[in-house]
Length: 112
Length: 110
Image (cartoon, rainbow over all chains, first blue to last red; front, side, top):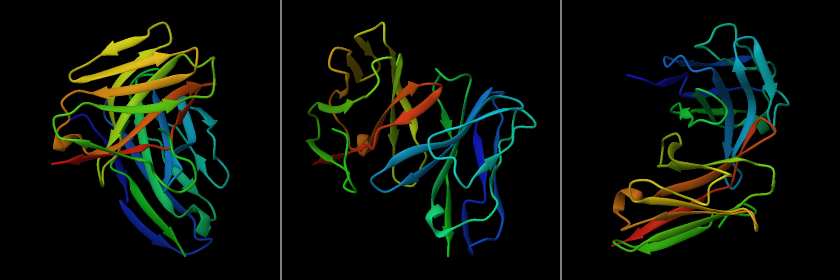
């Protein structure tokens, strides 16, 4: 089944404790992206990757890192999480920038 | 239409009627637009897309209209069903980034 998977689905952590949210797709898509979704603000792009070893900042990259060492995986790293990063995070993939994106199920992160 | 502040605009439509959800975009250079549907507890799901060289595109029960003059996009859903209840987002491609609108909640009245 073609899908985007994210882990963990739920995470509660404390300020400053490094964490990684994994994202994997099995569709051989070149484009991958991370979003955060906050009430009233819609989805905002954090980082995106056009292909392996190519990553770029989206609209809200501060406090986040990503890597794209292989095509299928695009982990989101929070080196020192803060409470303002409490949010619902979505990973997505597509063939390219101008193609429909397939979204993962989301990761709800709470930073206390 | 698109929301401002913390409140998500809601469109309430009688089951069986047509729904029209509107979206304003900001960049006249944007050349690709997409509509997504997000049901409660799920990730967004692609509905339909349109490129800037088109004014209208139809799918199954959905139509997207693009008015480049006033930078306006609309999604029309024919014969709205209970399963259409969701939050709908428009998105545009701008400078290699994907910019989402804040969303409109569609509420179906029985």
